[in-house]
Length: 165
Image (cartoon, rainbow, N blue to C red; front, side, top):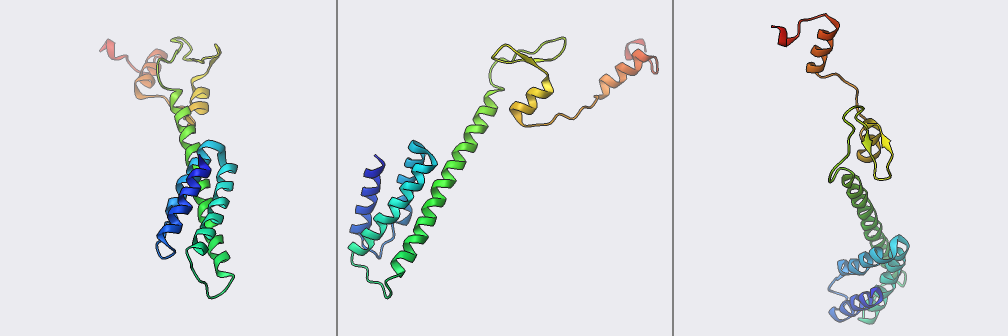
């Protein structure tokens, strides 16, 4: 499938001629390759796209003033194609991590009403702070809300309870 897409890009590039740039069209087989075969497959696809571009450009009759210009241009295209592949790979990885992180909070979440521990799918219970650090990437900051502070001070006898007023 990827080789067919690269061949199709080369065919379009050849028949449109060297004056019309189809530079960004080559991104499609690179993205398909990264999706199917990972980052290494995307890098290989980027290299193949560069070779196909050279063949299509020279085959379309593009004459260069210096012999090295075609390779210089191919190197720049290869770098662009690598950027497309690596960018797609890391974007996809980041979205996957985000999806896994948010799935930890989807659906019912067993919470002990006494100790406030979270029940994991594997049957183990862990502290709420640990669960938040692991699945949400946040570090809880211990604080006491004003209502709990008033209640604690009232139990200690420092202030009157609101219900006694």
